[in-house]
Figure (cartoon, rainbow, N blue to C red):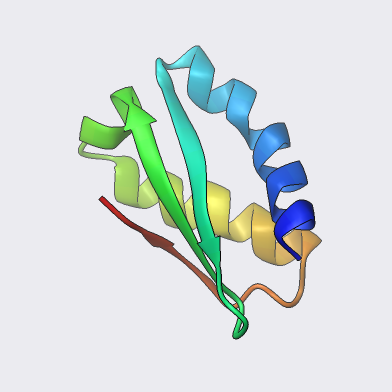
Length: 74
């Protein structure tokens, strides 16, 4: 499943990079929890929670039904 997650993140990445940020995959657990680190401008942005849930998590769940949630690690 990690490869599928990376593929989806690679599709999201250009939008984040356009705003000076990025996303790094940290881990994918057996129970469908994806752990990511937001970097660059995304790491310090007050809207990063919205980016995480409304963009990254939504797209991952849409493309990979096994994904249960996305968590940010620091």
